[in-house]
Length: 440
Image (cartoon, rainbow, N blue to C red):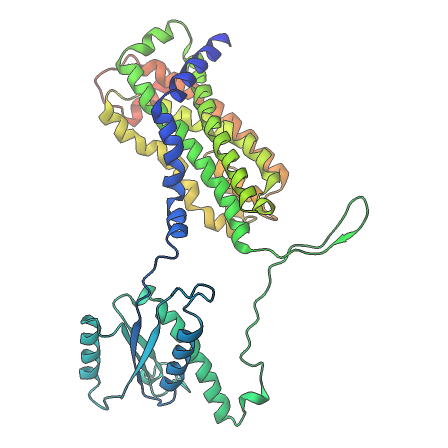
């Protein structure tokens, strides 16, 4: 045990004293959450140039309502009421008379105006949209723009158009809007917590309003924290072990410790490095949550699970990385084997949304109990309301610990045999043969 701790201490100090560790500690969150940060920093920097949209209305009744709605929006919604700063582009509706039978020529002319930047887009409204029939071309409303798929104007136009269509149908039915004043009112379903009772006093606590974004963000942040810590521990291990092998340092170390002891010491150092990073990130996260008044959104009950799952997860991935590194003979081999090391950590991220949406489904339960998926997916399920019961967390943790020990033992076998092989690129069958104890 003393040899294991001595190796772990030496590896840990050699890592945390480097400038690369400090730089990586700062850069990794930017790489993982940089998109969110950029969106937050530049949310006020958007193109607010006015948009002119031509409307070809074959009904003769929707274009005026669109122009009126756009004018109201331009006057009330696009400026900051406190500072007067323009926050969004103004929409100006240009009513274009239908061209009769020569539709293709009119469409081409409008498209050319869009290309010349005279128009932002043009909208074509069929003559039968008030009473649409499936398959009828005149029952369509089409929006033509170079970037129509992501154009905010297209989404805004649908509101006034459908509002006016409902009004027109009521008028034809002989009903005035004053007779049904709440017909167009839209109510959102509020997200609330459950009503609870105080265990000591029996006082009933009212339900609190919840935000679905906060319910999803907390488990996703935990998942990304585990992912960042795994990468921080695993990837440097591959190159460190490869360098020790190629420089013959590992042969000297094996003279003082058995392969399992050497591997376990290296894994403990990787764990200590990752826990150091975790302590920094958690401290900063708690301080930031206190500063921004996000404390009520922090899932405090999940933090003990994080402390349980993180060590075996790091040991598991670091062992895999060390095994791959011991099979490498040069940086080219290490580059080729980096991808197989990252794949087991990336795969759980592909299932994040299905697990968040259905945490009790058979797929979610099964995947969260498979060791390579457990650290991320089980953490996500434990962080969700009505996610995973505690006993599934315990089963997942036990399986993860056993699998991590197996990976360390396998890494030691591969490391011992790989030292005798120099100059040959590693192959899958070589790794399997080394596990069986043969270096031939």
